[in-house]
Image (tube, rainbow, N blue to C red):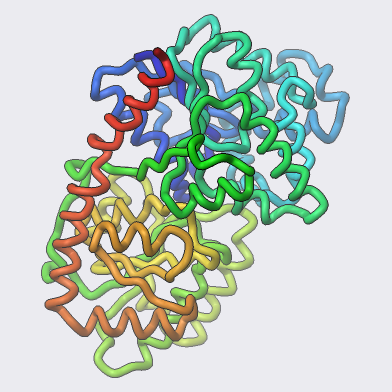
Amino acid sequence: MNIVQIIPGSGGSFYCGNCLRDSKYFVALREQGHQVIKIPMYLPIFSDERDIKDIPVFYGAVSIYLKQLYPIFRKAPQWVEGLLNSKPLLKMAASMAGSTNAKGLEEMTVSMLLGEDGKQQEELERLVDWMAEHCKPDVVHISNALLLGLAHRIKERLNVPIVCSLQDEDVWVDAMKPVFRDQIWKLMSEKAKDVDHFIAVSDFFSKVMQQRMDLPAERIQSLYLGVDPADYNYIPTQDKGRNIGYISRMCHENGFDILVDAFIQLKKKMGFDDVKLVLTGGSTGADTKYIKGIRKKLSVERLDDQVEFWEAFEGEGRQAFFNKVSVISVPVRNGEAFGMYLLESMASGVPVIQPALGAFPEIVNLSGGGIIYEPNTPEALCEALAGLLSDSEKLNSLSLDARKGIEISFNINDHVKEMTEVYESLSK
């Protein structure tokens, strides 16, 4: 099949689970003989530049932001447009505060959902023209429901089925000013008519989006995310130090401080002198002050030499991180629709300790490779960490179960076949 994926990039400044999800499906589909074209939006997907070096970044983040605020930029000459969409400038934008945060982008989100009736009409036509000339797809897969404004024009011009993934849209919308929230959910519900099929990443999130977007259950199918176990090195926990890991964007929403506070409490207990904390996942400019406060807290507790900020969170650097840790926790404050880092950790034989929120219980229970705790407090997390790190037999058993759970329940080679079946049923 000829498949087009439309994916918003994060700019590579932090660990982006949604970007990783799309990239892994891209690779798996190609390995199974399908022709797949990945079209980036807003910011580049730097880790995958070798796959998309000849494809332009559409809706360049700097350009559309300026056009939204200042109409004069809508009449700027082509050389100005080229400069604003250049990779060096987009890389700089990705590292700046607010470039990937919802607050302050409410009007932009509304305009994007309006599609051909929004302020990005010219960019939409540019995208559709490029797809019509270069792609000839059998199906178009849109990364998330915040991009539904694209669907009508693509469908009208290319006459192909549209599939849309659903993952963590609520996190983006609910962070916005209250006056915009209802408007955005209503627009997403209205634009859903242009989509042939929705794919939720978990049963939990399927139910969330049925309610938030007023979607009938039969229009949404749950397909779990997956990874290829062959891409990850399994190292038994007895061959590692008793190190605790964190892998995600280092921010308040992801509970970064909850884990740090739990670690501080753990180090005050007897029997954990050897335990260290290894932190990775990157950040944006909006997180700088927050992380500085975390570092200061660790310094006050005289734990600087017990904590390692691991800079390399892509490719080989990410695998090296998993080789260093025996357990990971990303205590996201409100839970998540899934959490790709759970699969990557468990595929590496690293058990997970997660709060009883969002889809975490669903994923951990199915994999058998972790522990669920509640409430989501430093105290409860500290006790869960202490219990597991004190029980080497259980830790080793969970490590084996984690890897086996990925091979059986979260193998992308199985899930991509299910996704292909969806595509083929819509293309008949």
